[in-house]
Structures are given as structure tokens and as C-alpha cells.
Amino acid sequence: MLALDQPKSIAPLISFRIIFGLIACWLSLRMMLLGWVDKFYIQPHFAFRLWGTHWLPELPAMALYSCFFLMAAAGLGIALGYKYKFSAGFFFACFTYVELLDLTHYLNHYYLVALLALLLWTLPAHRAFSLDYPISPNLVKVPALYIWTPRLLFVLVYFFAGLAKLQSDWLVLAQPLRIWLGQLSDFPIFGPLLSKSWLPPVFAYFGAAFDLSVGFFLLWPKSRKYAYFFVISFHLATAALFHIGIFPYLMMACTTIFFSSHFHEKIIATFAQVFNLTLSKLKLELVLPPFQRYFLLSFLLFQALFPLRHHLYTGNVLWQEQGFRFSWMVMLVEKRGYAQFKVVDGQTGKMSWVNNLDHLNEKQEMMMAYQADMLLQFAHYLANYYQKEEGYQNPQVYLDAQVSLNGRPSQRLVDPQVNLAQEKAELFSSPHWLLPFNKD
Image (cartoon, rainbow, N blue to C red; front, side, top):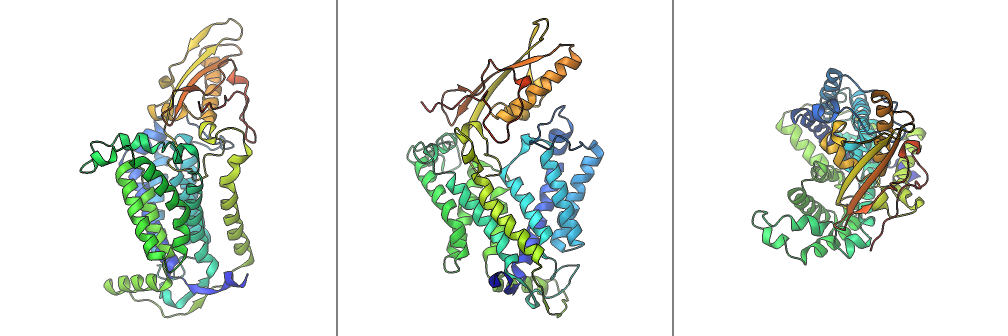
């Protein structure tokens, strides 16, 4: 364990703190400026929740806007190293809370943002070049584990994204890339090339190889600058072609933590010189407390095991999606779904067909249509709604759900004969009402 305690320059953590803080601030402001706070969290009548989070309260509109504004301020506090521990902890708590408010808006990169915020809250990334500690970073040493933990998290994110691509849809059918690239024939300059039938398999194999290897090449000093060139090229290409939000920019910016301490010290020194910053010459060498050692190692172990949990379930993970979230299964599915609910009065036999948009917004309906746990939640909501608002006795809820996976003809996802109002969420097993995927 001595290598974990080996003193290293704090400079990579300083750069990481500043970069992440600015991204966190921008992300929070972006949600408000684009009107997403109102559209996604205030207007909807119903919210889908992750298992075990239904107890979370919903904030009034003004309080929710205040939450986003304070998250932006906390992001700036992280970047500046001002009241750092409070800023990082506040951002982590509020961002995680917001992401748990509605499962509709789950994205892998939002999960990554939450993990990075948790790490920064734990790490002493403010002990130099900050408003809390205006000390020259080349004079502050921290245990090597503090630098290695975020690095290894990025390695795991890339590796599991590549591991998930080692399946027939990606490698044999080149799906869903074939669908997505086929829609880009009018892309400026490169449109005719992107529509070529041979290109999706090339992209598929390159993407899998990139994800599986790039984290390890970033770790190796001799290959690091070449690997980072591919990081920039890959993420700029995916950002231009597929419009996948902040993820490409987050990865391009934050993977600079792999570069040497000398690299970061030079950049920070240049920045300090340009802005004529006066920094203390106090020397510090931080030690690794036992609790922090065990927490960070446990964190990495969890991140190495949790993405594998889908192997505990039977069936195709791309179809039933048990173990799909929080597992870095990136860009693997193109799904289209249709969900028609029927509510039956258990006493009179009276039947009503449900218009989903009477209760959900368009994004909620689209995301729900092919995700089994969300379909079950909505079925329970409908049972309660029809009992309270329509006077149904012992309401029964049935569902005709048709889903197309990666360009295939639609198949039934749910057994239409099962009364979903009587079914409970299954956390550790595949529900009996979920129909198996037919590859043929």
C-alpha cells in the first residue's frame, strides 16, 4: 500500500477541480437558460422514479430554480476553491437529487458528473491554488491515490463502454450506427461518405477498440499524447455527428488529468503569471487517512463490479434493460416503442383506453414506451388515478407494448394478459411479465 501514499504534486487535481467546476456551473446555467427546469421538472404531472427513491420530495418551482442557481454558484465555488468542501458537497447533493427526480432524463454522463462531484468532495483538491488555500501547487504534495482514483474511474468508464460493444448488434450488424449514419446523408461535406454501407462496420470496430484501449494508453506516459489526440478526434466526431450532449466535452476536458504533474504545473504557473496572482510559498505534504484510503479503494472496487450486474439477470440486456443503467452502455440501442394501456373496472368490467399524453409529456412517453420499469410505474399510477378520479373499483391495468430494437420489426415487450396493477418491481430477478427477445 506504500505506493498509494507516495507523495505527488497536487497540480493535476487543481486542473481537474477547475475544469469540473466550470463545467458544473455551465451545466446548471444551461438547464435554466434552455427552459429545461420548467419543461422537465415543473410542468409534468407525473415523474418516473428510480427504485427506492419514491420518498424524495418534489420542490416548489421557486425552490427548484433556486437549487439550480445555487448549483451554478457551487460549481463556480469548486473552480475557485472557495468554501470548497461545502461547494462540492452541495453540488453533489443537489445534482444527484435533481437527477433522481425523474428517471426520464437519466443519461450516462449525468451519472458520471455525480460520481466526479462525489470524488471532488472527498479529495483535497482545494489545498493549493484556491481562494481557500492560495498556495503554489508545486509546493503541495498529496498521496498518489488522490490522483489515481479519478484517472482509474475514467479508465473504467471507457473500458466498460468498449466491453458492452462486444456483442452481435454492434460488431456484426453495426447497429445502431447503421441507422444513425444513414440519417446523415445531408451532413455538410461528408454526407455522401457517411451514407456508404461499408462505413458503419468501420466505425463500430474502431469505436469498440478505442473504448477498450484508450484508458490504458492514457495511463502509459509514452503513448499518452497520442491517446489524447484520439480522445479529441473521437469525441469531436461523436459530438458533431450524434449530438450527445456534454459527454464529449466532459471527457475531452477531464481526461487531461492523465497528463504529468509537470504539464499541469506549467499551465497553472502561466495562468498565475498572466493574472499576476501572488501565491504563498508554504510547503505542504498531506497524508492519506485510513478512512479515505478504504473509501476510495471501495469506490473503485464498486465501479469495477457494478457495471457487470446485468449478468445476474436472464435475457438480453439491450431488450429488458435490467442492469443497463449505471453500466456505461453507451450508444448501443436505437429503440422505438408503442405503449397502449387499458384500464378495467374490476367490478363492473367497464374499460377505458388511456391517452398517455393526458398524463405525460412527449419525452416521458417516448422514454417510457420501451423501458419495463417505467411501464410498470405508469401502470400503478393509472390504477391509483382511475380509482381516485374515475371511481373504478379494484382497477386492472393491461398493456400492449410493442418495441423495435436496432431497426428490427416491433415485438411485444410485455405480456398483454398480465394485470400490471398487481405486479411489483423486481430488483433481483427478471419479471415474469416481461417477454423474451426474439432475435429472429
